[in-house]
Amino acid sequence: MQAADLAPQELRTLVAVAGEGGFSAAAVALGTTQSAVSHAVRGIERKLGVVLFDRGRYGARPTPAGARAVTHARRVLRMLETLAAETRGVGAGPDGGDTVAGPLRVAAFRSAALYLLPPALERLTARHPGIEPTVRVVREVGPGTAGEVAEGRADIGIATLGTSTPVPPGLIGDVLLEEPYSLVHPAGHPRPRSLPLVDWRENCSSYTRSWWAGQDWIPCATVRAEDDGAVLSMVGSGLGMAIVPALSLTGAPPTLEIADLGPDRPTRSVGYVTTPELAATLAVRALIRELRELRGLAQRPQAER
Image (tube, rainbow, N blue to C red; front, side, top):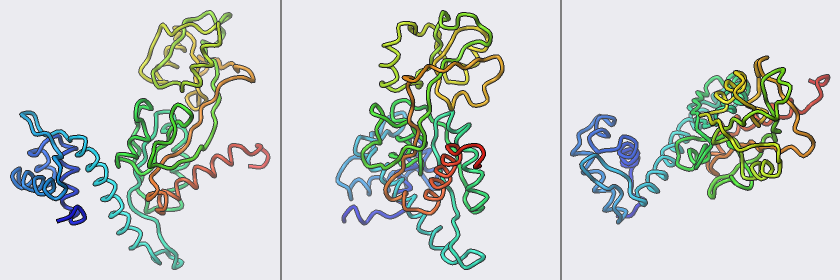
């Protein structure tokens, strides 16, 4: 047999074993027996000619080959779901046009999930009530949101893009906006640049860090927080200042004051990433269209809106 003989149920078994961390837990998730799952995995390994899972006392962990197989399995299963949804939607609209329906899995970093996605999803679901979006908040460190897409866990990711975080191989994407960094400090503080620096791990690209290194007034961070929300809370409580991108400052409370960093201030590129096959699907295309339209509205003068 060839790898092309793998059936959808076998792909679901791979995904379940990887996701649940073992054959017994995967069997519960699939509604079958542990022996059936074990037998299925052995059969898949024979077809592919590689060992996919390291079996041990504490469960099963994908080998490097297994991790790659699971990624492909997730992506193939997602396209099978899309095939069914888009085929059923042909000519099913009230005017005889196509409908867009089914799940849409979005991964986004925290500030994008809070401030960028909601208006886009509101417009999307108003135009396409059959779309069922889910948003997973992912820290933008390591593989980040792009990794969720690459590994088949998300259809589209809202990611930070740039020289230090390019679109990963095998994915496509585009920049949606360039957000400037600003200095944020306790409102009314007479000497905000004298305050300690509050920072968090996923804050900046290497480009921004290089800009920081050239600013002799910015000290090393002495206070660290888990995310940008915690940073703003600490700054508002008088514990320090911070260098923060614009999305994170949306709806900043009156306890904070925001200062422009000047014409040479750093910026952060925020965009989307998806797979080439999902980029052609109706739901992903519809969300990208809404994100781009919102960007266009934000860039237009107030009188034209």
